[in-house]
Length: 479
Ligand SMILES: Cc1cc2nc3c(=O)[nH]c(=O)nc-3n(C[C@H](O)[C@H](O)[C@H](O)COP(=O)(O)OP(=O)(O)OC[C@H]3O[C@@H](n4cnc5c(N)ncnc54)[C@H](O)[C@@H]3O)c2cc1C
Image 1 (cartoon, rainbow, N blue to C red):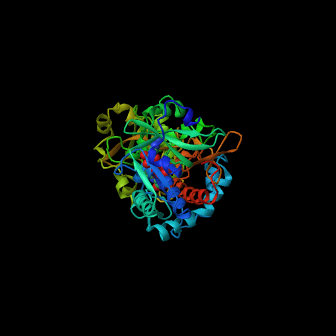
Image 2 (image 1 turned 135 degrees about the vertical axis):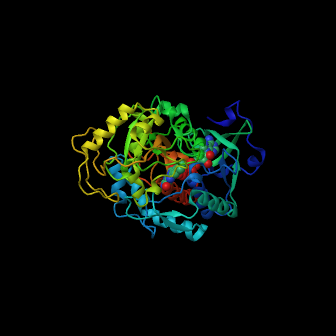
Image 3 (image 1 turned 90 degrees about the vertical axis):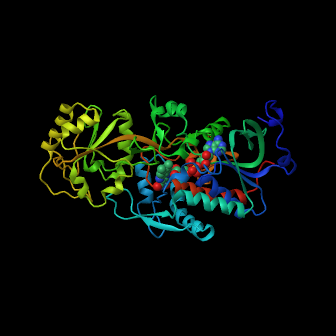
């Protein structure tokens, strides 16, 4: 709808009006939004680019600010040989192959761009998993450093960031091309005319209603794993759909992680489940804790804690956990375990019927076999005759003190978004690009089935960098 025809929309901002439409408006100040804006400003010197951020400068950056930001790359910044094939495999062939190929091809140049042009330093750090083969590349200072450095670059290049401004809807011209954004600032609506609009406002993990609608009736029980996710309420996705965008990504799936609900810190991970058993509130096991290495299972484990254990599970270990070198990397919670000298007493402390927990532990112990144990690899030490089985690391729980951590599923980000091509242009159901509209990062629906860890920040940065340069190169159809 044209703004001129909309009686509810006040006249566009006078200053912006006098200078004509902005060259680029980007919604969202995380990795995706900032990479796009910076790349555009680099490639279109003297242009007018504005990033809209609903929160304050202090709280800016959504999920990006809260992530350590592991990249699925080698220490030299290169994708591993199985980068593409693994992404296809985990999405069960549903993610767009051209998008994955572009990500694989452009990941290394993105790392170089960040390092050489924007002062981002990189380091390698061990992951949370005792089984992981090597450390992973990440920016020193994590996602917060990415936001800080890219925001500084943007300002140096002449772009700006407007804080406390929430995008609410897109405007279109009579041909359906996007020509601006409706926003709300200090409770007041206004309109910003723009030649091109990029939606980089994350997923909908911060919106209870949308979680219930798309993820499932109990989706509203899922809490974002870090404060930044609360700002991602799905407005970018819904406003694109309102102008004809197709949806993409699996709407009823999300990336979740097992966390300690007692903790108030972000990402209070409890990832040591391969070395113990997980039980529900009735003291019963409900999944195979050792079906694969934990980097391949933690998302599914978290999901099932939500779906099957109704957000109420406990990891039970015995004192032998403490002998595993590096076990502390898999326990990021700041809360101590609940400990007891016997399973009976532990059950009482957890409010589980002692008979039930004793029965579960006894059956588990009986099903373990005296084969070699190796916590650093899939050791094949499996239970015999137990349902559900434990396929690796099945070692008796027999050494006091016994320890327990409560475990919930926290939501990191949602998979559902809008359909884009490898140039990040937003597409209609018919596969046509919507003129003037782009989507980056979580707003662009990529993932299906299972998340290939350490790809989300990387793809936000990579497609942001590419889209910014592409938008600068191609003249706008509107304005
Ligand atoms: C604790 C944690 C650990 C993680 N670990 C990793 C990891 O190791 N590796 C990895 O690849 N990924 C990881 N992720 C996921 C990753 O951080 C995100 O998927 C990625 O940063 C998303 O970037 P983005 O730019 O799409 O969105 P975000 O960084 O979330 O930015 C969205 C921005 O849009 C703003 N916004 C939202 N709605 C509006 C609106 N209507 N108007 C204006 N502004 C709006 C938000 O305030 C926010 O600033 C992790 C996430 C978390 C929370």
